[in-house]
Every structure is written in C-alpha cells, then in structure tokens.
Image: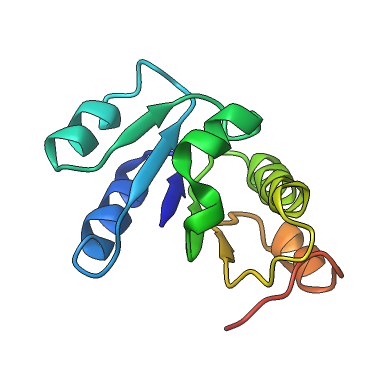
Length: 124
C-alpha cells in the first residue's frame, strides 16, 4: 500500500493497515513531524512529491494493491490519482491492474463530481 500525505489521520490509517499490508508513505513536506513518527513505527517514508515520476517509481506503486491519499487539498488528491493512472499506463499499457485508488476528499461537491466522472469509479 502506498499512502500519500502524512497527517494524524494518515498515520492512524497506516498503523492500522500494517498488520495485513506492506505500507510505504510519500510526504512532500520534509519538515512534517509525522515523517519521524512513521519511520519510528517502521513505515518507510519517501520525502518527495507524488506528482513526480521518480517518486512514484521509488514507491513501487506499480506493485501496490492500494493507494490512499490524505492530502490537505482535494485537488492534489485528484491530480495524484490521475498521475498514478497515467504512470501505470505508461509503464505497461496492457496491465490489468488490481490497484485501487482511495482518495480522502473533504468537500462533498468534489466527491459528488468524482462519483460521476468516467476517470473514477466509487464504491461505498
């Protein structure tokens, strides 16, 4: 599992998932205090922008079953999801991926628009 954005909620989620999944975190802010906390908990952290191909490559997102975003900005979450989709297609256009993208979205208007987008499918 790749977790994008370390926050209190992101840390709780990562720690709860560690029992059944391998977790790698990506955090853009090198001064985020949750980086040390995650590393102390045994969660590898890549400091960098998830919109950068090299960062996605370093996270081994192509092998992940789940990507979960906990970004402060809903637009960042959507942009990251689209970047990951294009990254995977570029790596292997025929790949039948089992990857699930889970976006933590704060605004109900954004959530509603995503539900009706062809690029995203939602499950409740």
